[in-house]
Image (spheres, rainbow, N blue to C red):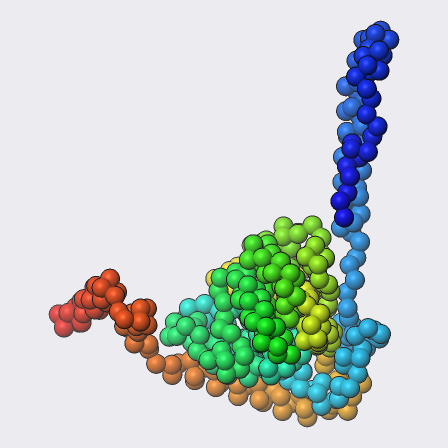
Amino acid sequence: MTVESTAARKPRRSAGSKAGTTGTKSTTTGTKSNTTGTKNNTTTGTKRTATRTAAKKASSTEPQLVQLLTPEGKRVKNAEYDPYVAGITPEELRGLYRDMVLTRRFDAEATALQRQGELGLWASLLGQEAAQIGSGRATREDDYVFPTYREHGVAWCRGVDPTNLLGMFRGVNNGGWDPNSNNFHLYTIVIGSQTLHATGYAMGVAKDGADSAVIAYFGDGASSQGDVAEAFTFSAVYNAPVVFFCQNNQWAISEPTEKQTRVPLYQRAQGFGFPGVRVDGNDVLACLAVTKWALERARSGEGPTLVEAYTYRMGAHTTSDDPTRYRHDDERAAWEAKDPIARLRGYLESETDTDEGFFAELETESEALGRRVREAVRAMPDPDHFAIFENVYADGHALVDEERAQFAAYQASFADVEEGK
């Protein structure tokens, strides 16, 4: 649809009629000129104030949030999304709880190992367990997942051994697992690029005629990247079967969400021509239901969806970050009251036959996982120092050979020092 400008719709005066009125108006020009500046300044100022007021009012409007479990663990009815979790059993609910507890325990152990010098870096998921477990359990085995570097809970759901996630952070490999074994791509460090990878893969899935779907994870900070906008464009134009799952944890390192967008992130999808929805990212049931809905849309040929999981990063961005320098303790305390694990536990205790024995057994299992992770990390063999030069070129290259020789000489210099001692 072509929208004609306001100026184009105004009737034009003829040159003669305009000239004929000049003499009459000239007598009043001097009088009006004295008030023009005041009038213009007043009008402009009023318009600017109105614009700011409207923008403030729009930003203060609470966006729609899909929630099935309140922070107190009470079930909330939702006619649109209840059908996607209608058949869930108490045993399955306990399974979701177990997933979140063990994922948090693994994450805590990895953080401790980094502090002990066993890992070079670690990106914690603390506080985001519901978003990851809920969405991860919504996927089918034949779906394909493209993560960032923080999707430890999704990796757990896809059957990736948690100890395999640590090799890259210890510096002994470039990933540690075969992506095609679990349809779970290697962790992506470059911010936002995995959304393009997911879109291209989804376009291929559609051309192959498969009924599987693709899901791409990214954070609120990545939503400002051009790669994400390009992925949105291509996925919409080609109707790709992909779900964009944005974990809005409120902080892109030290930048708050307000520095990323003037509207709720899920509303950005409208400009690209596909639906967006905001879900309570600390509600595992809601994340499960919304992601199931979005994946079913993708599989049935209805195209992409943007899911914004509204959650909070309880810890640092990575272990090299200090969040106390840019956010207040009361903010964290407010989100601790919405803890995803405590929320589901409250529901299990009040609405199911889950007893204390279940929680005690899970605690034992959790500690065993921590020990296994510690032992596995410390037992990881050092990589072959020269492996980096392999598989660069299929038939070899003179420059790579030269660099390999230089590196060999550098390594040998350490042996000379040791012998000198």
